[in-house]
Image (cartoon, rainbow, N blue to C red; front, side, top):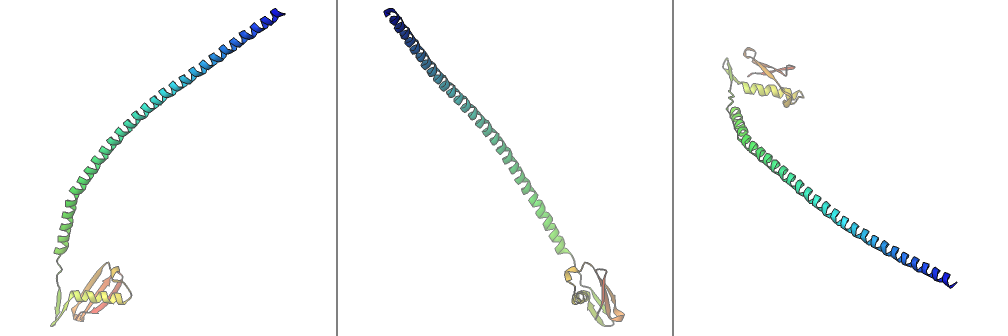
Length: 168
């Protein structure tokens, strides 16, 4: 029986050695796997960082291009506005002169030694129109007909409202 014990012990020793070898191989495999993962992670991180930097640079370049285009357009628009401004001012000045230069003659009617100013007759007609409950701002047209032999002026406002005022 001694021999069987020795054999059993030898088998146990072989099994223990084999188990130690397996453990050792497993530890080496795990260590190698960890190292591979670390290296892969580092490489991936470096690649991603490089791509991020490339993308940032590309986006930055595009942004700068767009800024330059927009700045150019703004400058061109400002110049166009500046160029148009004097033309508008000239047109406004010309229109103002035309308004200022509009002649408003003073017209008189003389009949049998009497005299009336037409502007006064127009104001009388407007006064009667307002007295009838209308607004002066609603007057769009005004026709005045003078009849000196009756000492009267007849008027029609907005083709609807008619009346008579004393001429003298």
